[in-house]
Image (cartoon, rainbow, N blue to C red; front, side, top):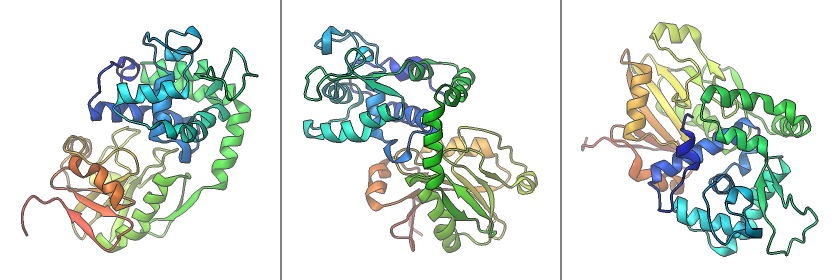
Length: 329
């Protein structure tokens, strides 16, 4: 995901538009994913913590006389940052969740350190704070996509033990999914790919006639599966592109190309996203845009963003779809 450095870290003290906030969160989550940070902890909350610890704006009343959160951030500081800069209100009683599910995980996976000035500091100290490691900050700060990818590629060599542990954990939790053609693919662990698996094995047999798999992306391997003969037949250029949807399936019987997004935290098919998909895939075949959610609760979070003319599928009620037609049939 390409977002200028100023747009990522140059935050203001006013509540930001939700679309801008979501881009920042998606940017951080994407980098964490590429660094093999566990999917179950790669959450909006963790992204908020990273954005807080990466912030270089001069502030008052910080720990140990620090001038910026980048120099050191307490959990209280992260909560205040999320409220003031990201429009997210965390209650003070969520401190333990933030500590265990976000800050501790960032430390355990080598992305942050606790109390670099005094590692023996008591956990009850009001000066307990966290700092992102320099290697991670360099990646976040890099405004050039190509250079940032090179920095990410160097991460395993600089952190071999942590990367080995992450890969072993990932291998133990990989998911197998069956394509409509009967072939089996291996998906990386995590809620997002669990939903991708349900789309392939539950949604497609119910709602798409004779689907043929054109493309399947993965949170770890963007071009996990590409049907090259079908791609050439349809005259579609794919390539390693950040705007590709999660899945592309073609139904010759229906004369439709299904562009499907699996949404667990960000990425529903909005009007803008629908136009991006149309521009990316061209007009050689009619495109049906589908947004898939795991639950009704997730659907409700994004309902006001969904584009007219698209379809919604909710995995917990798999027999039904929601059509945003804009007219009475």
